[in-house]
Image 1 (cartoon, rainbow, N blue to C red):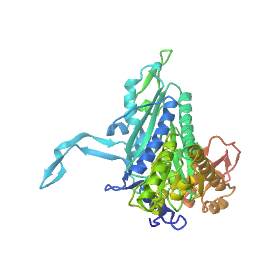
Image 2 (image 1 turned 45 degrees about the vertical axis):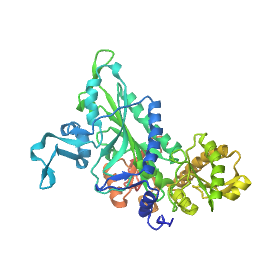
Image 3 (image 1 turned 180 degrees about the vertical axis):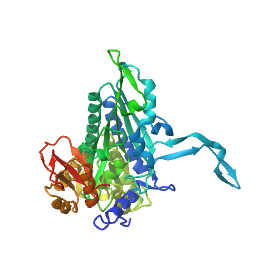
Image 4 (image 1 turned 45 degrees about the horizontal axis):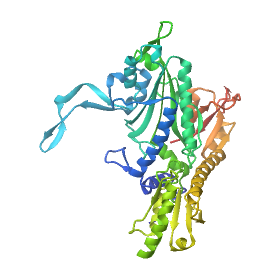
Length: 488
């Protein structure tokens, strides 16, 4: 299998696209800006989905489903929301086609009385339902999650990172008090942080977005930000405290214990198939995809090596009990016994797909009771006894998971710096990475920095100690340093 992956140092953008292609994760669809997620890519998303779904249920949430189509009038009910999404909406104006000269065209008589929006997000249609679901404090809280697809009419797209249609989950909750809603938004941010670090082995910074960067219609947007290998940040998850904005827009009230009618408090939160893009750029190398074992669709692949039918029969007979013992540990393992592909070609294919561990077994291994183990992350190969192999690889997969996180954390730490002055900031931002600096809190200064350096405030850290200082641009007082980076 010829090397078809561009070196990261030569062209990082092309390297990313090559990884997606060679790992057989996705491809462009006939519809501009959309993608076909191939079985390997979808299996990766299914593993992400399964882990997150359990975490949501463990925190008391239930899954539901709401319509793909939203009446246009719904979007106009919350002013900030419609302003934020107006330019990204796909609009349905007619309900049918008609045949004309062997082709089809829109039937002008089928024009809808009210246009429908293909959901860019579901706050509006969900809060319309909540109006009938909520009457009393006894109906609260409502903790709903939806797994769905959404459409945002993006002009510049890149597979997984930004597409017109993408898969995601969106949580939508309703609460009796502001405190409960804020706690929920922060709780779900912590769920995302835990998932990113424990499952994706991807360290993240957490914080709250500035006013100009927050979700349209939110009071506060909390986020997790990851640092990719090229030094750019990637927003990988957001959780929003919506206040009472949508409750007031859709007249969702509840009667409290004293008989008083009050508007409910709301949150929404979501992650998408963008996580796959983040996973690729966090761990992969110039040989292909590198996957953390907890999310890898196939955790171990076994490649038999032989020269004739007799050797093949002996190697497969030796390999099968090994495969069975590992499978009994709950590990996903594949025996690649395809006859029309040479071992070297198989090695390259599985390496490109990021399978964490490879076991190679040849006639000499059968004779000696051994096998060859190869780690995908380090490319290290060792000969090891077959006896006790199930326990050994189970431990080794855990080591790989931890090592991937440690390597990514070290890279993030090594590329996180603090600066005092604006000139120093301009120099440092050219090197990439996260930069902490003081900011005076104004949108004007934020926009000036963005225009002059292409860097944005990724978040205002919530957990860091607030050390007052002076804005690096204006010299005005600043409560704390914020996190800057160039981003995707």
